[in-house]
Amino acid sequence: MSDLTQQAGIALSGGQFDDALALFDQARTAEPENAAAHYGWAECAFMRMTMDMADDIPAALVMRSYKKAMTFDEENLEYVSSFANFCLDCGRIPMAIKEYLRLEKMAELNEIPVDDTLFEASRLIVEAIERLDRDNPICKPWLKQALIWAVGGLGYTVADAVETLSSE
Image (cartoon, one colour):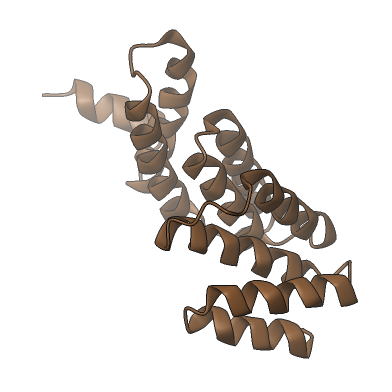
């Protein structure tokens, strides 16, 4: 990790979003393939959007920065998870689900448990669907996926959950 990226991380952890954004941007310029700098900039911009309710950075730029980070560090589960959360926050449910599915597959290949992350994702997906219309047919597959992750997060397989719910 470069000095600029470390300085930016310190500024970010101190809530100095403008300073952190500038430092991450300098790091991205100095090292265009620095995944941590792209990710840090995207995370900082996302935090600024959600915590400070700032809307001066277009979501498309944040999305592009997340994607660059994932391109330069394809195995980083944190990047994929954060990007999926960002997509949900922007109301891009299908893209978020696609990224969570990618996260699930990556974690499975590396034998890393992500049930807690997917359980939380299921809650966020249901919240996003509630902002739309749960009865809309387009939401059905999204709800189904959220339920599968919720059940998994509780330690059940789908079959076990069905059996448990149908027994007396």
